[in-house]
Image 1 (spheres, one colour):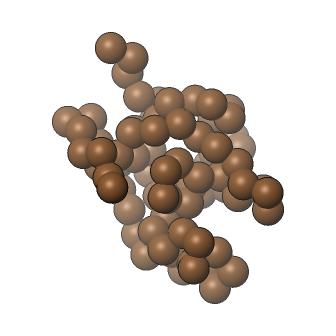
Image 2 (image 1 turned 180 degrees about the vertical axis):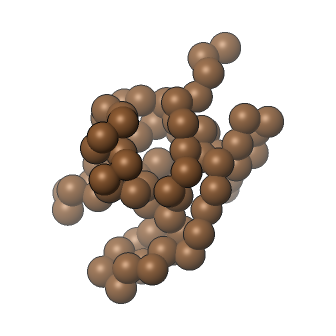
Length: 74
C-alpha cells in the first residue's frame, strides 16, 4: 500500500533491516545517499522509484528510491 502525497510518491520513516539495508515502507533506499544525508527515524518523502537492480535485495525490495528528501512536518 503506497501512501501518495503531494510532496512525493510515498512518505515514511527511515528504518534499517537486520542486513544493514536502509528502507522506507516497502522501498529500498540508496545506501550511500542515506548514510551521507539522513539518520534512522527521519521522516522522508520519496520522489522517484526504480526497479531494484540488486540480485541480493530484489526479492525483499522490488523497488528502490535514489531520490528522496526530508518530509515537511505538518
